Amino acid sequence: MDLSTIIFDIGNVIIRFKPEQDLRHRYTGTELSFIRKNIILTDTWLNLDKGLLTNKTAIAEISRRFPSYKNIIKSFLTDCYETFTLIPATARVINSLKQRNYQLLLLSNYHRKGFEEYLLKKDIFSLFDGGIISYKEGIIKPDPAIYQLLIMRYQFDPGKALFIDDTLENIAAAQDSGLNCIHLPRANKLEAELKARQIL
Image (cartoon, rainbow, N blue to C red; front, top):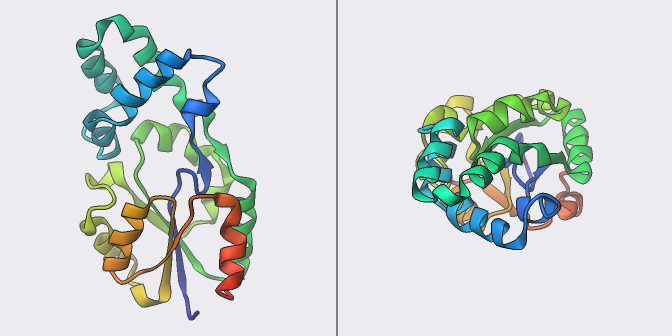
């Protein structure tokens, strides 16, 4: 495969983010169900990704709807980013790709707080040549506009680029934009996927 650019999603591709598993020591099952239903799977979460809300305003907005869960809401939206851990298998792949002189880009939906206060402290992100993080642009995957913005900003041929993401909806939108894709529900399979395509 003739490629010049490789584009990575972040969540569960580079960085593990599974709060329902990783926060079991901190919250009860009922509380984790509440967090998933009323925080993560909501428009408020999407608006954090779009940069339309700060964490402080999101906490206030959700707490107005669920005042009895106010402490849980504040705790989760303050501390959930501490669960971010680098996926070692992906880190090895990124280092190998960098040595092969591919242009490495990010394309991810992320909140300002999580990205700026936690992810940017991780050395792996210094290996990237750029990218688009949703909160900076006000658009999120799978909006076709975010893929076109990436292509235009970095001036690469989508036919010579590979996009890696764990979400099928995002993969479908990327393919519609002309990008080659790997759907990666399990990050530890990435090296094998790339070797099968003779990229590594």
